[in-house]
Image (cartoon, rainbow, N blue to C red; front, top):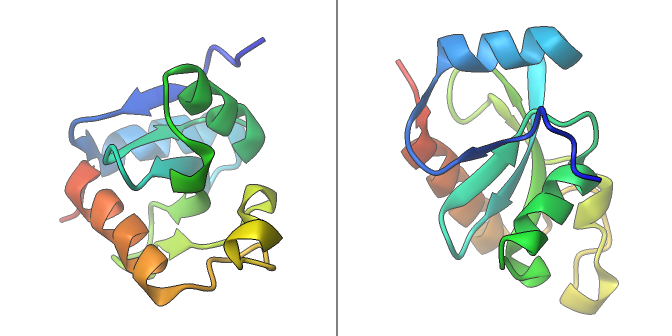
Length: 119
């Protein structure tokens, strides 16, 4: 069952909204899963795997999904932490919880920059 607190972000989301969502879970950050192909992300779950499941049900391909944490009190790009169990994918050459490939990291950052209203 998908967590009903998960939100699909496909248009701009404001820092104030991220603060509200983070207050429901972790306080200083929200977990997010970014689809680098579709340019969307899911946010608000307690675990990245739940956001990943939602995006997969919506037709995303796992190869394009990467887990991050967004710290709303920090400035871009430092607000993005590349740390998620869903990122461990030896078959894609990613053996850590981070994102080892710089090009992939930059694609994730591009989606975050497009979707989060950074002031």
